[in-house]
Length: 248
Length: 338
Image (tube, rainbow over all chains, first blue to last red; front, side):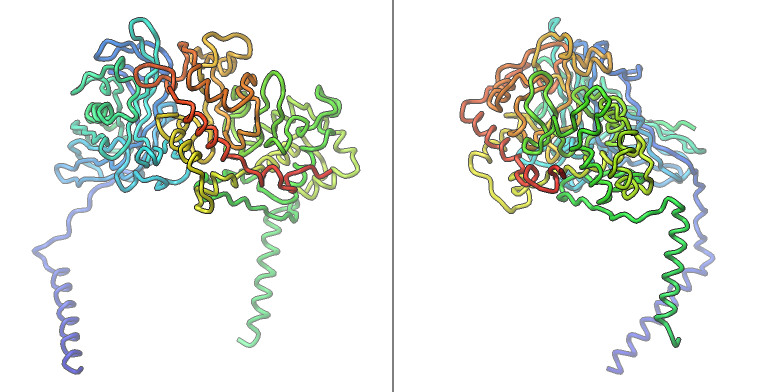
């Protein structure tokens, strides 16, 4: 027992010695404090190519040549990662952020480390941990985004609906994405600089959902829920549907 | 410390006094009332200036059942309960515009078939008091009982339209249905039959696609949809369009909750369907395309039919009947106080 105590005391003394040496070591200066910018927000905007989204008008044309309108747009963003460069670190905004295209979609971020960022990545939807039935708070928004248990459970990642013209006839389309296999991982390679209080702006180009790498055909794929193939195409197209910038 | 209990008593007394002073001259004693829905319901959003109290709810209940509310107004002689009977989930079968049931409206943001009123229960009750019933508060003020009930509920015997609306809002918040067979299934205290389970699978999958507008647990998404009842629209059938003027809203109506749906025939805004079987058949084969048809009504392949067989339709109706909450329609605390 005495021997054990001796070992413990020695270990404790050693630990003190090591930590105190490190603290006073002139060869390892404390890192310079990273300047921070307060009063920052996250703003989500919606466009059809370069035109701000207007609901309910059959005025847009997609890559397949179909004219279309937008009547509903709801989705989640999570794990928004601002990619650090030249001294800044990666910064993760876990979310999830529920977005409704008819709302303001401005979220308080508080203080952000200032500096240059190489771009960002984000999930259009939810992580596997979040995407489980009843895992999100029971708000009316989350309840309406539920993905039924018989169809795999969790939540819709996105509901994007409207009308389109097919050979002169107006029809409905419903681009719904859900299930972990179909989670879009969005990349935004645009560098930006956080210099003063302002807005991190994510811009969602809805026409990209129909464009590439898959030219999406609404006439044969007007309803995606239940089709892993169609949801897979939408997943791939959504990967490049966002860009990012900073607006002082 | 020789007298710790005495010191504690003095401390508590001073605190209480201070709180009463902070509350001001309007402070009065009321009994808080808690509504505790199952865990899968959304949190109730109760405005800070109209907390639920037993006194407020009881006053609202009395006003709901009392024709005095309509005295000297366009609906003289009628009470809320004239068109909202507890045994039919606070609805009644009528000809013409169907009467929406008063159930779980605490979670609603859009009211009436066209969403004429938006906001919370206080907002829609202001509409009911000021525009629908055109309540004459002087009649209530002259009543032998009401001034005292208002004083108990709100600390002021002077009756205002706003106080009437607040009392009614508390009562409507109390009209919560959470004990249907389907609720008990969700809480693992009762099993559904094989037929009901089959119907549930149809409801909760693309086979029936009911869940998008009637999701669990509220069984409404609180939004407006043109479900293809008509191909063209005139008069009241224009629906939400009459409020917004937006052509996309032509023929769109609020998705009603399916809570107690088996009790609230006839169905649709104009009561055109007498049975749930007729409703299911509409979705199955009767949807009329139009430019404002809700996109969700167009199924894969651009068809507007569900193509359910007879057994599937019967199973779906059996599942809809599990939304009936017998406790809600028989609870004496929700019945008339007269």
